[in-house]
Image (cartoon, rainbow, N blue to C red; front, side, top):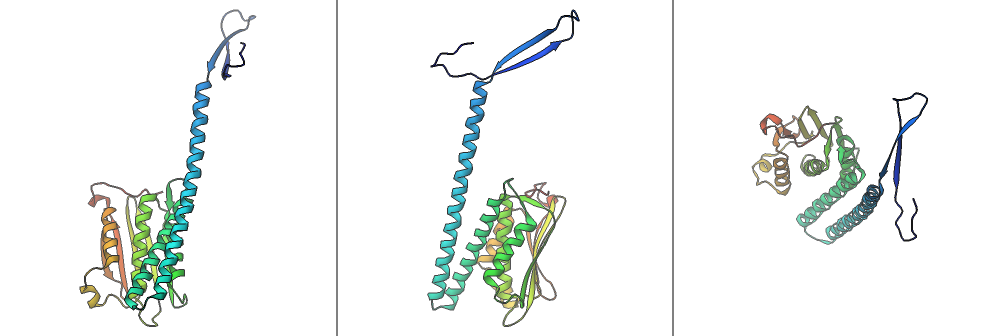
Length: 261
């Protein structure tokens, strides 16, 4: 086959198959020729688009991480300047929430399969929270126990934000003064059912706080739990408090928002 200088080269696949019938002394071959030019061009275009998408996603993640760091720095600077203790507390809470989202973003960027392994994810998240909020790690400790479950990215974001709010609440209220103690974040799944809990061995929930109007953190936890079709249960840990987010498939008509590895 001859090509002109202007013609586009074609890519052909030749397949030869020996035929086992007829005269044994004569070799018969069945030769097929397939033109795969268009298929190869399509595959190359697909690969190029995937590489371009990966580069754009990496750049987006880099910009998001930088933006979150800038916002967190601005909030911390503002907290140092204000005179009101209440305002300073709100700014510190906002800073911690931004940092937790930054940790979530970092963990999701590292997940290439679309699923997030919860033990490592929650451990990294709590390390970030502890580094920014616990001044004396000998006085207050923050630990994580979790099974081998993995969940998709959307579910991990909700779980991470719930943990952030509950840990922040425990650090603010469970250990007044110089009281020491520990906070434990635990995730356990049984089949399609799972429980996420945050426990502390602090002073418990004072009646004044129990009777108070739910704050922003409580509202966030309840909204995220509803999104996960889970329930929120708060109980005394004697000492301390345990808040559990419980998802039971039988209670939600068979809906399973998390995928257990």
